[in-house]
Image 1 (cartoon, chains in turn brown, cyan):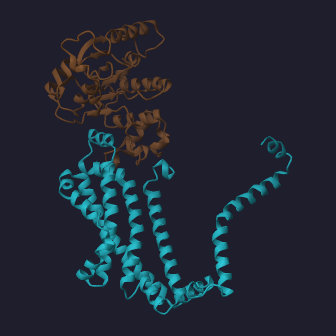
Image 2 (image 1 turned 90 degrees about the horizontal axis):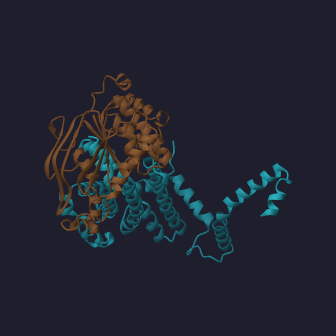
Length: 275
Length: 277
């Protein structure tokens, strides 16, 4: 309840996301098969799965960076057609411009009047005093916080997080979880987090979705109260259940070898990262 | 090593400081020992008459000649003419190289259209064109400008093209998803990303610029450093010839310092160029 009270007036809230009969094919290889997903405004969704399961592809489709082979993706009932202004992405790498100072990275592409707003968001991620620094002087965690500020300065209604904490150390990750959760509670955007870390998914998400071989294999609501403590017994039980489910299926697809030989050839697995 | 550590606290701190200061001065002086020694040996050899002034004038005579030329204002006019030629050639050739490099680097169609032609022409040494250039332009200013422009064009073109092509595609994707317009993407991401490569091209060009200038000025000229030295050669004024050679060295060094200054300013964000406040 308190989160609603904190919500600043200029935040327009999150978007509703509808994904119907979505398919994505790269040549012969089908990365996503008949995916259905409905996400309520302001929900925090975590998508987990093994490398190459199609989770990042799903995110790139929602971002409008890729086009679906079949099916529809709708934001608030309108079909996604290329990049859209309500959506911002945080990538696995910070992708800051090394030749722009921190504040200029945050306000990238915005008019000079937006600088106060940039400073405000930098303060929200705890980096107000580093505004004039070059990105090369920041640590990995600080760079990702600048990237988060750069996404939030646009007041996104849909924030896509593509394993943004994958390269950070364990302590920095826990700090970032708190920060992301706090900012999400405050701004109430819809969040879609792709991660291979089940603990991270359970710590942050309202709903954890497991993608396996291009299909949604598990869709679980996490009703634990926030802020969540990772030492908690209920937390650990949920984490274990999901992790067991992820591991249940071996990576080499012994379960369905007959009709699915194309998944076995190695190089095609790597191909997804090239596009 | 152990002994040293034990001895140091015993020694008076002021003496210790003086010793490290002296070591520092010595370290700075050592690289100069050989050149200064050579010049002294050269001066002695000339004074004793071992070296004919026809072969090599005494260093002191070179200094005197430089002073005479400076005092009469002759030196300054020749330097001005040479520098103006070099810079005009650089502006024309380098400007074209930059423009075409940006074009072929950014637009696939222009790469297909132009790049293979440019790569073919690149393999012709600019100096091989001299007979043709003399036929086309005669032996006046435009011939010199043409030679310099042609030779500085390629390093800048190639490095600009290469720089644009090597801009991190992840940054470009980021720029697009953050709603940058085409022009903003160019200004904020592509051009700064290519800048270090473009500056490498500029430094190559500056080096070539002086080489070609020297050759062009020795072919035929009525003014400039090349004219000064060729004219002095006719009258066996080896001291003036040496002044000319030293001037080329000095101008080359100045141009390189200028290019380094540009690098230090434009790439000040880059850890390799010393990230500063």
